[in-house]
Length: 253
Image (cartoon, rainbow, N blue to C red; front, side, top):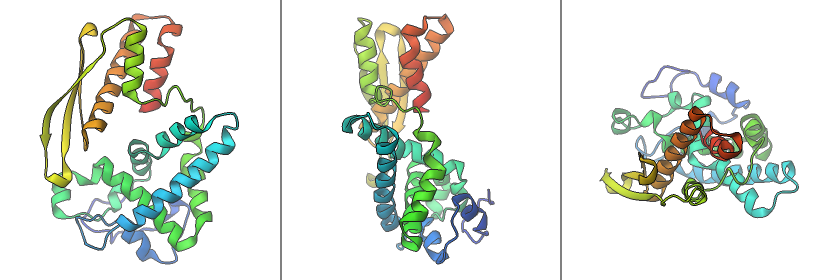
């Protein structure tokens, strides 16, 4: 991983090696790594292209990999793979943060490790590869980065964490959770919502942050599910009773 500097004057050969693609127009890769806080000429347009390309290629592979799975479940699987959290993890595995060009404000507030910036940059890189070399190298990159992630996906595991938590509590005759916004901060275009999820009958409470209330609620519910899974594993509960939540926790992280 290159040294974290305010520019990407560092050699990009290592990143291209990780991507399995060498750019003909290296300026496209640099643009893909340029956040809007750094320049008015930034990666947002390439992100738009990359989002469409990634969704298409992942969807196509899931269609072939799971021939018995119906459209609604395939949509859930694709959403898991191309959502921000998964893209952030993939971006981190590539060491993408070290190559980002960010404005001073973003640098001071930890922008290099901000999930949304990393996810957007990965999509932009995909878009840059498409504009430089067409669909085939994008297809090769999806194979490289997502093949392992596509294995063993199950529709039940991919449900919205709020839905999974609600179904679990209902199945055990417990009171449903409550969600409360405990804080909202940041500028209008960079809101950060802090939401608390309470499960009073289990004496559980988890707080999470995200750029929208809905996303923060989902994240808090996911954290509660993780705690429940750990508690059940620690108590030696039967596999038949704990398997679904434990698998859910492993799939979500």
